[in-house]
Image (cartoon, rainbow, N blue to C red):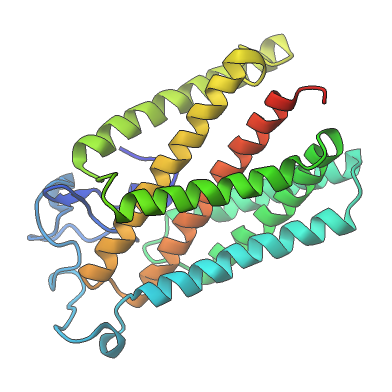
Length: 283
C-alpha cells in the first residue's frame, strides 16, 4: 500500500510493532523483509544481507545518525524557506505570479516523481524539489496573506505546534506506531485522497468548489482531517528515523528522512493555510 509520502511507500512494517525504516527499494533476497512483497516478515531491514553493516559505531561505518537527519532536514527545509521568501518579496501578486506558482509546482512534482522511483536518495533532486516547492509556497502564501492578512504566519506557527506536539507525543509513547495504527491511518488517508480527487473532478465539471469541501462547516471538517493526517505522517517519519538510526541504515538514508519530514510539514502548512482562510472567512 502506497502513501503520498515516498518515505512511507518504500518500506513496510517488519519488526512486530515497528515501521521498518525508509529509503530506496530493496532487492528481493532471502532474509530481506521485502522478499516476496511481504512487508511483515519480521526481520531487520538493515541486516547484512542488504547493507553489510559492520557492528561498530555509526560514525566509523558511514551509518545514519540523528545528527545526519537533523542537518539534512535543516538544509532541505532551509531551501524551501529561502525559495518561499524570495518568491514572496520579489514577485508581486498578479496573474503572472500565479502562473509561475503553477509552473514551479509542476517542476517540483516532476522532481518528486523522479526521486521516489530512484533506488537511492539523490540530494540534487531533493534540494531541487525543495527550491521549486518553496517558490510555489511563497507565491501561494503571499496570495493568502493579501486576502487574509497574517494567515501564513498563523499557518507557520500552527505547523510548528503540530510538529512539536507530535514529537513530544511520540517520544513519551503517547502515540505508538504499530501495524494497526498504520493500517487505520493509511485507510483514512486513502479515503481522504479519493474524496479530494472526486471533489476536483466535480469542480472541473460543475465549477465552483465541487462538493463544497473547501468552504463552510464541511470545509472546516475536511481541513481538520487534513491536518490530523499530516500529524499521522509525521509520526511515521519519527518511527522510520528511530528505526534507521537503531538498525544501522546507511548515512545517505538521512536524505530520505529529510525528504519525508519536508513533505509532511508542507502538507500540514497547506492544510492549515486553507483551514485558517475558511475560519476567517471575509475578515
